[in-house]
Length: 113
Length: 109
Image (cartoon, rainbow over all chains, first blue to last red; front, side, top):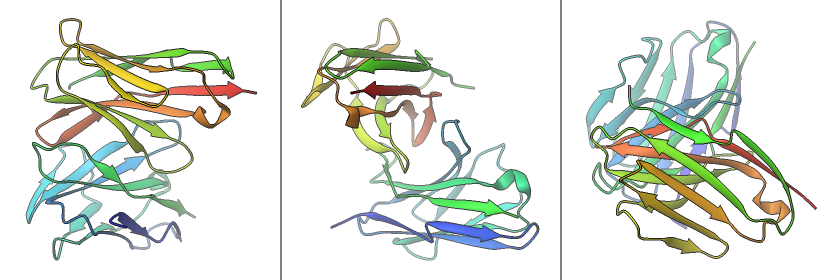
């Protein structure tokens, strides 16, 4: 089935140790998004790619970076995770910015020790 | 910043009850309003609403948008324990989703 896949589902890292989260999609959607969701809060958009065009939210910390090497894959890099970065990280895709229904992957839960 | 406000923040009902969840939004660059259901995993898509007054239905769930009142409601009839979840609404503006804080629905047997 076409879907949005995130790996790993759970990630444990150490304070300050770089970590990469992965998202892939078989929907052939143009837009891919990364959200951060902390406990009991709504998802917060970090950035999104429209094709290769990167769009960063103004309040996304510099510690968070993203790469999209091709249509199917998008990565979230956290250069120096802090305890406050522990959260669920959600990847979503949409066909375009006009066709705006976003379909979410299962998420990666990040724990920072 | 564009705001989306949901009410109530939490709701506890018994199986068979009907519930109405509310979502209000600010109008700037409004494109559409989305409803999602989130259990202990990623949000799953329920409805996208773009036109005022047209009800969308899926089984026991229905939703409608009122652009005049800048609001939307999500109705769930004959609730079941499997409806227990966080219900999120989000407004879209050219690719950006702004979520409300969610309504936590708990359905007791």
